[in-house]
Amino acid sequence: MSFGNPHIRYWFNPAPADLGESEEQFLRALGGPAVLHIPGKDRSRNRAICTLLHGNEPSGTRAILRWLKQAVAPAVDVLCFFGSVKTALTEPLFHYRQLPGEPDLNRCFKPPFDTHQGSTAKAILDTLIEMHPEALIDIHNTSGMGPSFAVSMNQDRTHKALAGLFTKRMLVTGLKLGALFEYSERNVATVTIECGGSQDPRADQIAYQGIMRFVTEEDVLDPKPADWDLEVLLEPVRLELTGDTRISYGNQEDAQADITLPPDVENHNFGRVSREVQLGWVNPLSWHKLKMNAPDGKDVKDKLLRLEGRSLFPAQALKLFMITTNPAIALSDCVFYAVRDSGSDID
Image (tube, rainbow, N blue to C red):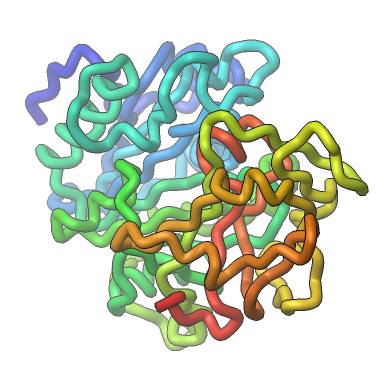
């Protein structure tokens, strides 16, 4: 590999002793954005894992470090990418999704690459283009508590096979956000894995077990019989808020807020939410600050949500996921994703 990208460190086959004794020591050893190249039994092929695109999502880092410390040889060469290393190291450890005033790295995998995060994203893309892995996995934690799931732009047999290494749910979306999983458009099987909440030990275990399957199995693109039992949800839409929205979390409406959600709203993750379930409160004068755009850009909010006075309800039975109780994430990214209760797309 002719690697000389100044925006990402290349580290070939590090010895377990050089990785440190803790997650913090490991990240300090990386020093910044990095790719670790682990040689496999078959040197003619390679696969890629990316993690830590958000600094507050540690499960992928923990899982990769656990694997590397065990010195288990992979079936093929494996490239391990670590994105927001300095963000994760900013005290307190694994606290910041992105540093204040900086863009979300996982929205920077599209031109222009004119920010520091954009340069990191382009360095990751350039390395992937040069190495052309047979499969790419992007490991995340959900922004709230909830079960694991995969996200893909395709629902063909290879993407189902990759998802099935980690989870039993797969979301299929055409939304273009500048996220890494859109790399699948380059004819490389790519899925994002949301392992669960960052404070949930089960998320660490899901990441570790899935990564061990991904690196040790001879063929990860051939679906197993169980993969056809995946729950597939089509074309989710996001509840997004305009930048001037005031959001609050509480058990009763905050009169100073545009939208108020109960603190336990994330309990609805992947459960059926009927038309009778109150999701929160919205000031009717602020209804225009809520947006739910389909992949074609059409706002479908009125198909999914309704106001009765100031109370917010589903307009039809839904499944919600990636619900966040972090107001910063709700404002900078989204409040939740939604699909019809049947799993079909909105239109």
